[in-house]
Length: 445
Image 1 (tube, rainbow, N blue to C red):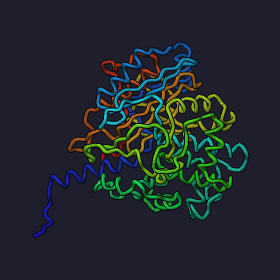
Image 2: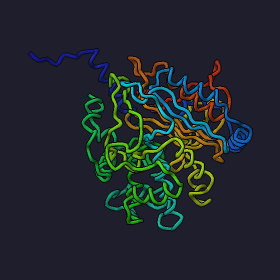
Image 3: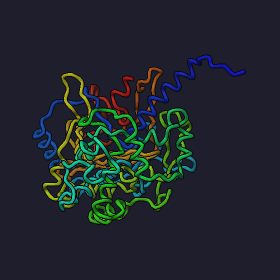
Protein backbone atom coordinates (compact mmCIF):
# COMPACT_ATOMS: atom_id res chain seq x y z
CA UNK A 1 0.00 0.00 0.00
CA UNK A 2 1.32 3.42 -0.93
CA UNK A 3 1.77 6.18 1.60
CA UNK A 4 2.90 9.81 1.65
CA UNK A 5 4.97 9.89 4.84
CA UNK A 6 8.07 12.06 4.60
CA UNK A 7 11.39 10.31 4.03
CA UNK A 8 14.10 12.57 5.50
CA UNK A 9 16.92 11.04 3.47
CA UNK A 10 14.94 11.32 0.23
CA UNK A 11 13.89 14.88 1.06
CA UNK A 12 17.50 15.90 1.74
CA UNK A 13 18.58 14.41 -1.59
CA UNK A 14 15.84 16.29 -3.44
CA UNK A 15 16.83 19.51 -1.69
CA UNK A 16 20.45 19.03 -2.77
CA UNK A 17 19.32 18.27 -6.32
CA UNK A 18 17.29 21.48 -6.33
CA UNK A 19 20.40 23.43 -5.34
CA UNK A 20 22.59 21.84 -8.00
CA UNK A 21 19.86 22.17 -10.63
CA UNK A 22 19.74 25.88 -9.90
CA UNK A 23 23.52 25.93 -10.18
CA UNK A 24 23.24 24.20 -13.54
CA UNK A 25 21.58 27.34 -14.88
CA UNK A 26 25.14 28.67 -14.87
CA UNK A 27 26.57 25.72 -16.78
CA UNK A 28 27.46 28.05 -19.62
CA UNK A 29 28.26 30.87 -17.25
CA UNK A 30 31.22 32.60 -15.76
CA UNK A 31 31.90 31.99 -12.08
CA UNK A 32 32.42 34.87 -9.70
CA UNK A 33 35.37 35.00 -7.38
CA UNK A 34 34.36 34.90 -3.73
CA UNK A 35 34.60 38.45 -2.47
CA UNK A 36 37.18 37.54 0.17
CA UNK A 37 39.52 36.48 -2.66
CA UNK A 38 39.63 39.98 -4.11
CA UNK A 39 42.24 42.50 -3.05
CA UNK A 40 41.82 46.20 -3.90
CA UNK A 41 43.41 47.15 -7.22
CA UNK A 42 42.55 50.11 -9.41
CA UNK A 43 41.87 49.68 -13.13
CA UNK A 44 45.07 51.56 -14.03
CA UNK A 45 47.14 49.51 -11.60
CA UNK A 46 45.62 46.34 -13.01
CA UNK A 47 46.56 47.34 -16.53
CA UNK A 48 50.09 48.21 -15.42
CA UNK A 49 50.45 44.90 -13.61
CA UNK A 50 49.22 42.98 -16.65
CA UNK A 51 51.62 44.85 -18.95
CA UNK A 52 54.54 44.25 -16.59
CA UNK A 53 53.71 40.56 -16.41
CA UNK A 54 53.40 40.20 -20.19
CA UNK A 55 56.63 42.10 -20.80
CA UNK A 56 58.82 40.15 -18.41
CA UNK A 57 57.40 36.60 -18.35
CA UNK A 58 58.79 33.62 -20.20
CA UNK A 59 57.25 30.19 -20.45
CA UNK A 60 58.39 27.77 -17.77
CA UNK A 61 57.58 24.55 -19.60
CA UNK A 62 58.50 22.33 -16.68
CA UNK A 63 56.16 24.20 -14.32
CA UNK A 64 53.36 24.21 -16.90
CA UNK A 65 53.68 20.47 -17.40
CA UNK A 66 53.78 19.87 -13.64
CA UNK A 67 50.67 21.97 -12.94
CA UNK A 68 48.70 20.30 -15.74
CA UNK A 69 49.68 16.86 -14.41
CA UNK A 70 48.66 18.02 -10.91
CA UNK A 71 45.23 18.90 -12.31
CA UNK A 72 44.90 15.34 -13.59
CA UNK A 73 46.19 13.80 -10.34
CA UNK A 74 43.65 15.84 -8.36
CA UNK A 75 40.88 13.91 -10.12
CA UNK A 76 40.35 15.48 -13.54
CA UNK A 77 40.06 12.76 -16.18
CA UNK A 78 41.91 14.63 -18.91
CA UNK A 79 42.92 18.13 -19.95
CA UNK A 80 44.70 20.03 -22.71
CA UNK A 81 46.31 23.42 -22.49
CA UNK A 82 47.87 26.02 -24.77
CA UNK A 83 49.97 28.82 -23.27
CA UNK A 84 51.66 31.76 -25.03
CA UNK A 85 53.97 34.60 -24.20
CA UNK A 86 54.45 36.70 -27.31
CA UNK A 87 55.84 34.37 -29.97
CA UNK A 88 56.69 31.64 -27.44
CA UNK A 89 54.23 28.76 -27.28
CA UNK A 90 53.70 25.67 -25.13
CA UNK A 91 51.07 22.98 -25.61
CA UNK A 92 50.42 20.06 -23.32
CA UNK A 93 47.95 17.35 -22.43
CA UNK A 94 47.47 15.17 -19.37
CA UNK A 95 45.24 12.27 -18.43
CA UNK A 96 42.86 10.30 -20.61
CA UNK A 97 40.37 11.10 -23.35
CA UNK A 98 38.47 7.86 -22.71
CA UNK A 99 38.31 6.37 -19.22
CA UNK A 100 37.23 3.02 -20.64
CA UNK A 101 40.15 2.46 -23.02
CA UNK A 102 42.76 4.72 -21.44
CA UNK A 103 43.25 6.61 -24.72
CA UNK A 104 45.52 9.53 -23.83
CA UNK A 105 44.65 13.17 -24.26
CA UNK A 106 46.11 15.17 -27.15
CA UNK A 107 46.64 18.96 -27.08
CA UNK A 108 45.13 19.27 -30.58
CA UNK A 109 41.73 17.76 -29.78
CA UNK A 110 38.55 19.63 -30.67
CA UNK A 111 36.37 20.58 -27.70
CA UNK A 112 32.94 22.02 -26.96
CA UNK A 113 33.68 25.52 -25.63
CA UNK A 114 30.26 26.47 -24.24
CA UNK A 115 29.81 30.11 -23.30
CA UNK A 116 33.02 31.24 -24.95
CA UNK A 117 30.64 31.25 -27.94
CA UNK A 118 29.21 34.44 -26.43
CA UNK A 119 32.37 36.39 -27.25
CA UNK A 120 32.00 35.40 -30.91
CA UNK A 121 28.32 36.37 -30.94
CA UNK A 122 29.07 39.70 -29.30
CA UNK A 123 31.79 40.47 -31.87
CA UNK A 124 29.24 39.81 -34.63
CA UNK A 125 26.69 42.17 -33.04
CA UNK A 126 29.33 44.86 -32.55
CA UNK A 127 30.25 44.58 -36.23
CA UNK A 128 26.65 45.54 -36.95
CA UNK A 129 26.97 48.42 -34.49
CA UNK A 130 29.97 49.67 -36.48
CA UNK A 131 27.88 49.52 -39.67
CA UNK A 132 25.08 51.53 -38.07
CA UNK A 133 22.55 48.71 -38.27
CA UNK A 134 22.36 48.19 -34.49
CA UNK A 135 22.35 50.76 -31.69
CA UNK A 136 23.62 49.33 -28.39
CA UNK A 137 21.30 51.56 -26.39
CA UNK A 138 18.19 51.00 -28.49
CA UNK A 139 15.40 48.81 -27.09
CA UNK A 140 15.43 45.26 -28.41
CA UNK A 141 11.76 45.72 -29.23
CA UNK A 142 12.79 48.16 -31.99
CA UNK A 143 14.30 45.17 -33.81
CA UNK A 144 12.33 42.16 -32.56
CA UNK A 145 8.94 43.47 -31.38
CA UNK A 146 7.16 40.12 -31.74
CA UNK A 147 9.88 38.15 -29.98
CA UNK A 148 10.30 40.57 -27.04
CA UNK A 149 7.04 42.50 -26.72
CA UNK A 150 5.52 44.92 -24.23
CA UNK A 151 7.52 46.58 -21.45
CA UNK A 152 10.63 44.43 -21.84
CA UNK A 153 10.72 45.15 -25.54
CA UNK A 154 10.66 48.87 -24.70
CA UNK A 155 13.02 48.82 -21.70
CA UNK A 156 15.64 46.11 -22.42
CA UNK A 157 18.41 47.44 -24.65
CA UNK A 158 20.84 45.55 -26.85
CA UNK A 159 23.61 46.45 -24.40
CA UNK A 160 21.63 44.91 -21.53
CA UNK A 161 21.44 41.64 -23.43
CA UNK A 162 25.17 41.56 -24.09
CA UNK A 163 26.22 42.43 -20.52
CA UNK A 164 23.52 40.33 -18.80
CA UNK A 165 21.67 43.18 -17.13
CA UNK A 166 18.38 42.57 -18.96
CA UNK A 167 16.71 40.87 -16.00
CA UNK A 168 15.52 38.12 -18.39
CA UNK A 169 15.63 34.61 -16.89
CA UNK A 170 17.68 31.71 -18.20
CA UNK A 171 15.85 29.10 -20.25
CA UNK A 172 17.96 26.06 -19.31
CA UNK A 173 15.96 24.76 -16.36
CA UNK A 174 12.60 25.21 -18.13
CA UNK A 175 14.08 23.40 -21.14
CA UNK A 176 15.39 20.55 -18.95
CA UNK A 177 12.83 20.45 -16.08
CA UNK A 178 13.84 16.98 -14.92
CA UNK A 179 17.26 18.33 -13.93
CA UNK A 180 15.67 18.97 -10.52
CA UNK A 181 14.45 15.42 -9.94
CA UNK A 182 16.48 13.14 -12.24
CA UNK A 183 19.45 14.83 -13.92
CA UNK A 184 20.64 11.73 -15.78
CA UNK A 185 17.21 11.15 -17.30
CA UNK A 186 16.99 14.82 -18.26
CA UNK A 187 20.36 14.71 -20.00
CA UNK A 188 19.69 11.39 -21.72
CA UNK A 189 16.30 12.47 -23.03
CA UNK A 190 17.75 15.69 -24.44
CA UNK A 191 20.66 14.11 -26.29
CA UNK A 192 19.09 14.23 -29.78
CA UNK A 193 16.33 16.78 -29.18
CA UNK A 194 16.08 19.69 -31.61
CA UNK A 195 15.13 23.01 -30.05
CA UNK A 196 14.45 26.25 -31.92
CA UNK A 197 15.98 29.45 -30.48
CA UNK A 198 12.58 31.15 -30.56
CA UNK A 199 11.16 28.36 -28.39
CA UNK A 200 14.00 28.65 -25.89
CA UNK A 201 13.73 32.44 -25.75
CA UNK A 202 10.02 32.02 -25.03
CA UNK A 203 10.86 29.80 -22.05
CA UNK A 204 13.27 32.40 -20.69
CA UNK A 205 10.80 35.25 -21.14
CA UNK A 206 8.03 33.27 -19.45
CA UNK A 207 10.16 32.46 -16.38
CA UNK A 208 10.23 34.73 -13.34
CA UNK A 209 12.89 37.45 -13.67
CA UNK A 210 15.77 36.56 -11.31
CA UNK A 211 16.81 40.17 -10.61
CA UNK A 212 15.51 43.65 -11.39
CA UNK A 213 16.35 44.94 -14.85
CA UNK A 214 19.69 46.76 -14.79
CA UNK A 215 21.25 44.24 -12.36
CA UNK A 216 23.78 41.67 -13.55
CA UNK A 217 22.44 38.11 -13.77
CA UNK A 218 23.92 35.65 -16.25
CA UNK A 219 21.33 34.34 -18.70
CA UNK A 220 21.83 32.33 -21.86
CA UNK A 221 18.51 33.67 -23.12
CA UNK A 222 20.21 37.02 -23.73
CA UNK A 223 22.56 35.52 -26.30
CA UNK A 224 19.90 33.57 -28.16
CA UNK A 225 18.06 36.88 -28.54
CA UNK A 226 21.35 38.41 -29.76
CA UNK A 227 21.57 35.67 -32.39
CA UNK A 228 18.03 36.37 -33.55
CA UNK A 229 18.90 40.07 -33.68
CA UNK A 230 21.77 39.19 -36.04
CA UNK A 231 19.36 37.21 -38.20
CA UNK A 232 16.99 40.17 -38.39
CA UNK A 233 19.56 42.84 -39.33
CA UNK A 234 21.75 40.73 -41.64
CA UNK A 235 19.13 38.49 -43.24
CA UNK A 236 21.44 35.54 -42.65
CA UNK A 237 21.40 32.54 -40.37
CA UNK A 238 23.30 33.86 -37.31
CA UNK A 239 25.59 30.84 -37.08
CA UNK A 240 26.52 31.23 -40.76
CA UNK A 241 27.09 34.96 -40.28
CA UNK A 242 29.37 34.37 -37.28
CA UNK A 243 31.26 31.72 -39.25
CA UNK A 244 31.90 34.00 -42.22
CA UNK A 245 32.49 37.28 -40.45
CA UNK A 246 34.09 36.33 -37.13
CA UNK A 247 35.58 32.83 -37.30
CA UNK A 248 36.99 33.12 -40.80
CA UNK A 249 38.05 36.74 -40.29
CA UNK A 250 40.06 35.56 -37.29
CA UNK A 251 41.70 32.87 -39.45
CA UNK A 252 40.50 30.00 -37.24
CA UNK A 253 40.70 26.54 -38.83
CA UNK A 254 39.14 24.30 -36.19
CA UNK A 255 36.28 26.42 -34.83
CA UNK A 256 32.73 25.75 -35.99
CA UNK A 257 29.09 25.31 -35.11
CA UNK A 258 28.48 21.53 -35.30
CA UNK A 259 26.10 20.36 -38.02
CA UNK A 260 25.00 17.31 -36.04
CA UNK A 261 25.15 15.93 -32.51
CA UNK A 262 28.70 14.75 -33.20
CA UNK A 263 32.02 16.59 -33.16
CA UNK A 264 33.55 16.17 -36.60
CA UNK A 265 37.24 16.12 -35.67
CA UNK A 266 39.38 14.14 -33.19
CA UNK A 267 38.10 14.75 -29.65
CA UNK A 268 37.89 13.34 -26.16
CA UNK A 269 34.86 11.81 -24.56
CA UNK A 270 33.17 14.34 -22.30
CA UNK A 271 31.91 13.23 -18.90
CA UNK A 272 29.16 14.86 -16.87
CA UNK A 273 28.85 14.20 -13.13
CA UNK A 274 26.23 16.84 -12.22
CA UNK A 275 27.65 17.22 -8.71
CA UNK A 276 27.44 13.48 -8.03
CA UNK A 277 23.83 13.07 -9.21
CA UNK A 278 25.11 11.24 -12.33
CA UNK A 279 27.22 8.43 -10.90
CA UNK A 280 29.37 7.21 -12.50
CA UNK A 281 29.90 10.21 -14.73
CA UNK A 282 28.51 9.64 -18.24
CA UNK A 283 29.88 10.57 -21.66
CA UNK A 284 27.87 13.29 -23.40
CA UNK A 285 30.30 14.15 -26.19
CA UNK A 286 27.54 13.20 -28.65
CA UNK A 287 24.83 15.80 -28.02
CA UNK A 288 22.55 17.99 -30.13
CA UNK A 289 23.65 21.52 -29.31
CA UNK A 290 20.57 23.32 -30.60
CA UNK A 291 19.78 23.89 -26.92
CA UNK A 292 22.81 26.25 -26.77
CA UNK A 293 22.99 27.87 -30.21
CA UNK A 294 24.60 31.32 -30.33
CA UNK A 295 24.91 31.20 -26.53
CA UNK A 296 27.15 28.15 -26.34
CA UNK A 297 27.29 25.64 -29.23
CA UNK A 298 30.75 26.27 -30.73
CA UNK A 299 33.49 23.67 -31.04
CA UNK A 300 37.11 24.84 -31.09
CA UNK A 301 40.69 24.00 -30.11
CA UNK A 302 42.89 25.62 -27.50
CA UNK A 303 45.21 27.03 -30.18
CA UNK A 304 42.28 28.56 -32.05
CA UNK A 305 41.02 30.19 -28.86
CA UNK A 306 44.36 31.84 -28.20
CA UNK A 307 44.46 33.05 -31.82
CA UNK A 308 40.94 34.44 -31.49
CA UNK A 309 41.47 36.39 -28.26
CA UNK A 310 44.86 37.73 -29.35
CA UNK A 311 43.36 39.08 -32.57
CA UNK A 312 40.30 40.44 -30.77
CA UNK A 313 42.25 42.21 -28.03
CA UNK A 314 44.77 43.41 -30.61
CA UNK A 315 42.06 45.26 -32.54
CA UNK A 316 42.00 42.93 -35.55
CA UNK A 317 38.31 41.98 -35.36
CA UNK A 318 36.66 45.21 -34.20
CA UNK A 319 37.32 48.91 -34.48
CA UNK A 320 38.67 50.81 -31.49
CA UNK A 321 35.26 52.24 -30.54
CA UNK A 322 33.54 48.82 -30.61
CA UNK A 323 36.34 47.14 -28.67
CA UNK A 324 36.09 49.90 -26.08
CA UNK A 325 32.35 49.20 -25.74
CA UNK A 326 33.08 45.48 -25.39
CA UNK A 327 35.47 46.21 -22.51
CA UNK A 328 33.03 48.49 -20.67
CA UNK A 329 32.08 46.31 -17.71
CA UNK A 330 29.59 45.92 -14.87
CA UNK A 331 30.16 44.09 -11.55
CA UNK A 332 29.41 40.37 -11.96
CA UNK A 333 28.93 39.60 -8.25
CA UNK A 334 28.16 41.29 -4.98
CA UNK A 335 31.29 41.47 -2.81
CA UNK A 336 31.37 40.98 0.92
CA UNK A 337 31.63 44.20 3.00
CA UNK A 338 35.05 45.78 2.72
CA UNK A 339 36.00 43.75 -0.35
CA UNK A 340 36.24 44.65 -4.02
CA UNK A 341 34.62 43.04 -7.04
CA UNK A 342 36.99 40.51 -8.65
CA UNK A 343 34.99 39.76 -11.80
CA UNK A 344 33.49 42.32 -14.16
CA UNK A 345 31.47 41.52 -17.28
CA UNK A 346 31.54 43.53 -20.50
CA UNK A 347 29.85 42.66 -23.79
CA UNK A 348 30.56 38.95 -24.12
CA UNK A 349 33.94 39.43 -22.46
CA UNK A 350 34.93 39.54 -18.79
CA UNK A 351 37.90 40.69 -16.79
CA UNK A 352 38.92 38.51 -13.86
CA UNK A 353 41.41 38.98 -11.03
CA UNK A 354 43.47 35.85 -10.40
CA UNK A 355 44.88 34.87 -6.97
CA UNK A 356 48.38 36.08 -7.92
CA UNK A 357 46.96 39.59 -8.36
CA UNK A 358 46.81 40.08 -12.13
CA UNK A 359 43.68 40.95 -14.10
CA UNK A 360 42.97 39.05 -17.31
CA UNK A 361 40.43 39.23 -20.13
CA UNK A 362 38.49 36.37 -21.71
CA UNK A 363 35.62 34.02 -20.98
CA UNK A 364 34.90 30.51 -19.80
CA UNK A 365 32.25 28.01 -20.72
CA UNK A 366 30.78 24.67 -19.72
CA UNK A 367 28.36 22.34 -21.42
CA UNK A 368 27.46 18.79 -20.46
CA UNK A 369 30.83 17.06 -20.03
CA UNK A 370 33.15 19.78 -21.32
CA UNK A 371 34.57 22.93 -19.77
CA UNK A 372 36.95 25.56 -21.13
CA UNK A 373 38.80 28.63 -19.91
CA UNK A 374 40.46 31.21 -22.20
CA UNK A 375 42.25 34.15 -20.57
CA UNK A 376 44.72 36.78 -21.83
CA UNK A 377 46.53 39.86 -20.69
CA UNK A 378 44.86 43.01 -21.97
CA UNK A 379 47.34 43.28 -24.85
CA UNK A 380 46.85 39.60 -25.76
CA UNK A 381 50.52 38.78 -25.28
CA UNK A 382 50.30 36.30 -22.38
CA UNK A 383 47.54 33.71 -22.81
CA UNK A 384 46.20 30.39 -21.61
CA UNK A 385 43.41 28.23 -23.02
CA UNK A 386 42.49 25.12 -21.06
CA UNK A 387 39.90 22.45 -21.85
CA UNK A 388 38.91 19.41 -19.78
CA UNK A 389 36.47 16.53 -19.90
CA UNK A 390 34.83 16.08 -16.49
CA UNK A 391 32.30 18.72 -15.41
CA UNK A 392 30.38 19.55 -12.25
CA UNK A 393 32.75 17.40 -10.24
CA UNK A 394 32.19 19.48 -7.10
CA UNK A 395 30.47 17.83 -4.15
CA UNK A 396 28.18 19.27 -1.47
CA UNK A 397 27.45 18.52 2.14
CA UNK A 398 24.05 17.87 3.68
CA UNK A 399 23.68 21.63 4.18
CA UNK A 400 24.14 22.29 0.45
CA UNK A 401 27.52 23.97 0.96
CA UNK A 402 30.49 22.97 -1.19
CA UNK A 403 33.01 20.50 0.19
CA UNK A 404 36.80 20.99 -0.25
CA UNK A 405 37.61 20.91 -3.95
CA UNK A 406 41.14 19.70 -4.86
CA UNK A 407 40.31 19.62 -8.59
CA UNK A 408 39.25 23.27 -8.55
CA UNK A 409 42.37 24.24 -6.62
CA UNK A 410 44.56 22.52 -9.20
CA UNK A 411 42.59 24.15 -12.02
CA UNK A 412 43.27 27.63 -10.68
CA UNK A 413 46.87 26.62 -9.97
CA UNK A 414 47.44 25.85 -13.64
CA UNK A 415 45.63 28.92 -14.97
CA UNK A 416 47.25 31.33 -12.54
CA UNK A 417 50.72 29.90 -13.03
CA UNK A 418 50.34 29.98 -16.81
CA UNK A 419 49.28 33.63 -16.79
CA UNK A 420 51.58 35.01 -14.10
CA UNK A 421 54.68 33.00 -14.91
CA UNK A 422 55.03 32.13 -11.22
CA UNK A 423 55.11 28.66 -9.68
CA UNK A 424 51.68 27.10 -9.85
CA UNK A 425 51.51 25.81 -6.28
CA UNK A 426 49.17 27.82 -4.09
CA UNK A 427 51.03 29.25 -1.12
CA UNK A 428 49.65 28.88 2.44
CA UNK A 429 46.99 31.51 2.96
CA UNK A 430 46.40 32.01 -0.76
CA UNK A 431 42.89 33.12 -1.76
CA UNK A 432 40.25 30.41 -2.10
CA UNK A 433 39.36 28.94 -5.47
CA UNK A 434 36.46 30.57 -7.38
CA UNK A 435 33.17 28.71 -7.22
CA UNK A 436 32.85 28.29 -10.96
CA UNK A 437 29.24 27.23 -11.30
CA UNK A 438 27.55 28.60 -8.21
CA UNK A 439 26.34 32.07 -7.47
CA UNK A 440 26.68 33.07 -3.77
CA UNK A 441 22.95 33.63 -3.40
CA UNK A 442 22.28 30.07 -4.57
CA UNK A 443 24.58 28.68 -1.92
CA UNK A 444 22.71 30.60 0.79
CA UNK A 445 19.29 29.23 -0.10
